[in-house]
Image (tube, rainbow, N blue to C red; front, top):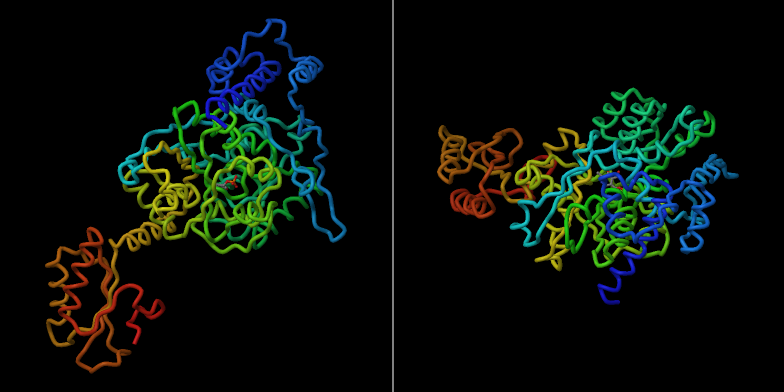
Length: 512
Ligand SMILES: Cc1ncc(COP(=O)(O)O)c(C=O)c1O
């Protein structure tokens, strides 16, 4: 299909959605939010008496314009159900009956969360020259709690009925969704109980507690934590809000897409980190509705490729997961609603290795002065890993969607990134134990301009002669070439020397 035609079709879609939105929220016409300006640009002149909020009028207007009206989520029974085997089920997220989120849901979310979340900057990146692409970074880690999850949480909470608000909400989360719920729950005076699995990052657990929410740390993974959270919902009458599959969450995440489209023109691709699929579903729906030519590319960690598996199987399918730097993406089974909404709109899904996530975190700190967590850096990681070279010369947006990284993990990532980069080298060398043996080694290293970070020597367990000592050194170089220079000098000067992976990782000694 030709691009202009597709664009025209999407615009007429927007007009329909916009009019629908105007019927519900006539005030939007006076606002300056992204939705309002999209609406103003797209809608045709409407007779003034169309501005009414009566549900009957909405339905009538909708049926004459063939707008599909879904039953509002609040009218779907949200009471947690129990299977015969005792497992609990969220009726809003079930396999056979997915809720497909619509563009109108996103525009409605955009209006509702406008004064609750930050319209974060989206700016051209220094990484453009490094990658050969025109890169724009959407800095959503600048939300108050450090992630885009506030968008969905804020919208879902604001859409609750008064009765639901007073009873409170619950959810299971590894961190960012929990944080967002706790923060917005406090602002809206809604009691929040979050269940975080024992593997959740400590920093995120503590941050949730700091917002005054009830934080239950239980369950060895998300699957168990979800069951515990749903049990609480059933017993205490809380509303359960799935962090990536509740339709309001997906719609809320879509506002990130709308903002990007307002901020950057002529986008060729948006690269979206993907866990349970809520973010990619919302962003893809917003982007493809307004500009169908934009490529939507999802990125997952190779430690949990659940969306790739779902695309391959044609339905959400559970995968085993392993610990990953991108903890926010570690969802073994993607959401049914997220999958139904996103799958038809995704152009490509790529799977990135851990080492590239560490390098992406390092590059963002060094070149952009941005502290971003593994999940948030995975879009850049896919580019650095060379998985998206077909985007060279194109205008590419990367949402940096979270910044909540434990300081110790950040330190390790930076070191790992430096090591993979060839700028941090570990070697083990056997030198003479006579006076001056270790000093000679240090001088040799210093003559190449390399700086020693750590040095350790050992005599007792080495198998060569008693006049030798084994020295393990960790040092910092300028780049790979500098590292190779040092390696050459060391191998020319010593008989027994081993580098990095030639060493036994447990003993840090040479592999015999
Ligand atoms: C920082 C970050 N990026 C991306 C994602 C993935 O979002 P979703 O689960 O909606 O796919 C998450 C999920 O928690 C996250 O925390």
